Length: 145
Image 1 (cartoon, rainbow, N blue to C red):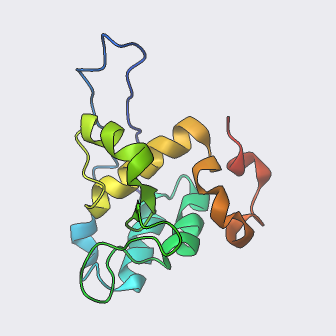
Image 2: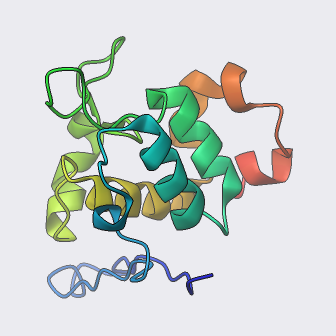
Image 3: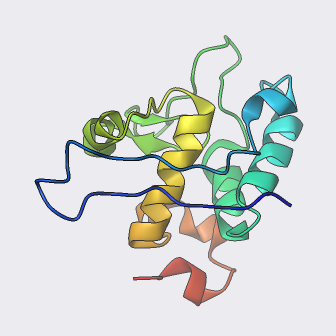
């Protein structure tokens, strides 16, 4: 199993310009082709979030393990069209931060990397709107902070 690391976020304004993004280097979407197949996406997510299995469950609830729609475009949220990709990251709230971290939320590897960052910072709270689907899991996973 690959070693898992996390995203480093700045603690102060002075650190904001120097950010390092660390991801599970051995788990990349390119190794799970075709990534347009939800079964391959599920395998990718299970490996990527091996240390946080709840996140793979959240992705299944949020996007049915899809990063692309039937036309090959990055998946948009049904209820909120600002939500993007397999982890349904909201562009209005998170795109600027993701860009500062050097992440493109339309890229599946970056989408899950940013989801990991959100989870490490807020627990599962950013995905509470789909909690009826995944809430049967441990409450300690849901509210880490």
